[in-house]
Length: 71
Ligand SMILES: [Zn+2]
Image 1 (cartoon, protein in one colour):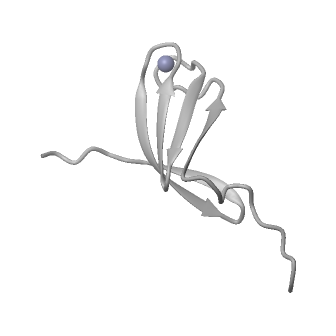
Image 2 (cartoon, helix red, strand yellow):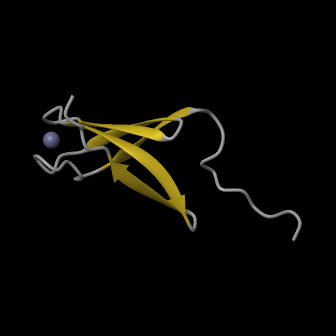
């Protein structure tokens, strides 16, 4: 196959998107900032922060939430 369309995700190392109503704490709008394979989600309402690793599976973006290891 030639000229396979490329997903839009590739490009600049950092980008942002919004996910409305996805705050686990208050269901508020969350601003997600991508840095390489990592995503930092910050709630615009309550400031709840979630760090995730971003995977791509079949063209879909999957967030894997980082669990803080005790240290
Ligand atoms: Zn919130």
